[in-house]
Amino acid sequence: CRRYCRHGKCACADGKSLRSDLQAHCERTVCVCDPDWVGRQCDTFVLSTWDYLPQALPVTEDVAWWNPHDESKSFKKLVAEAQKPNSCPDSVAFYPDLMQSGLGSTLMLISAALSDALYLGKMFLPPRNSHFASSSRKCKNHPGFECFFKPWAVFPRSCKVQIEALKSRIGGASCNNSEDKCSRMHLVPAPYESRGRFWWRSNLMKYLVQTNVQFRQSLDLESLRAKIGLSKRSIGVHVRRGDSCFLARAGYCKTFRDYIPAIETAAWRYNISRVFIATDSPSVITELEQNPVDGLEFVHLPMNRGSFDVQKPSQGSGWKMSVEKRVQRGELSGHSVVLSAVRDILLLAESDVLIGTGSASFFKLALLLSAAGKKRMPPYISLDSPYCDSWRMCCDVAPDGSKETC
Image 1 (cartoon, rainbow, N blue to C red):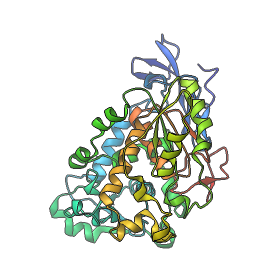
Image 2 (image 1 turned 90 degrees about the vertical axis):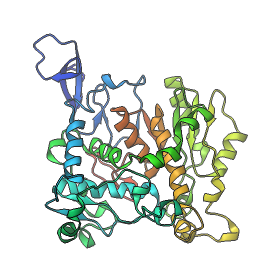
Image 3 (image 1 turned 45 degrees about the vertical axis):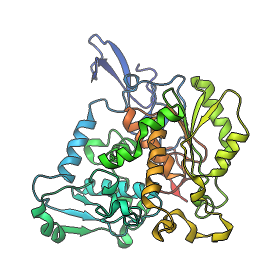
């Protein structure tokens, strides 16, 4: 073990516990990886690597880097004490300048703000409103993200006035729309530094994306899995061809054919033939139906993807045709948009292998949730960049994970 742990330490695994003493008898030895390194040999650095393809599909017990000393339990305690106190909190962090755009980008920014608040030892006060909820009749009693997810902050009613007086406005020039402008949002609280930024963010995202009972019933994932045949092992592929490809990322998005080599590589290595496609583009679905790939079975959720088409000539183009702008104008149901997006994200996260683009917040969400749910890093391939804490794309990534965004 000591000979092949490239970026970690060898530990003795007795049952589900780990110890550094290797002199006594060991049931087996494992590598406990340094922050943000993964794999049995701790040889893949998540913050600068475009893919992670172990020789075989890993199982939780084989990869000790994720949770060697059960930090997940202490993480839950930390968040519960900060976000759901039994008494009035001593301080509250409020981020009024956080930009709300697409669901994926918005959740990435909110996770950054939650991270910052916890790092500062403050309660994170979530945005009161979401354009996805405030524009929907189904959310009339919950204009914020509570229409879809369990409450992110819960405090005694008697604290309401005190919280308004306590809340610290964090924003402006020092920490505005993007966490790229606020280096503190990349920091991990001391007890979890040994796990790294990806572990920290994945647990934060798991906390944020806990669907409430009513929305979970609307998702109806169990019947959808049965309908499209997702009971077997699958490769989850997010094909980004929506509004951002013609607006923020004009000219940079991949065609569906660009994904085929990566899909075939994963299918061959892990002997998987079923491929779940998550996309908001009707042209992608048409292409995969008209051009089947030998040995692969593509499945996707039934939905009206035409409603997301930003290039409808009769309705104009440009930013006014982005999904969020159309939701704000009432042309699209915010509830329906989130419903279809969360269905795709959660089914992607359940897949055994993930393929997408690191520039897409949607793909990053699925990767974070997949790792948190499986308690290990799933095999994945990114076609354009490594994982990035930012809601944007990471460029010029150095071996230590430092980078620029673009």
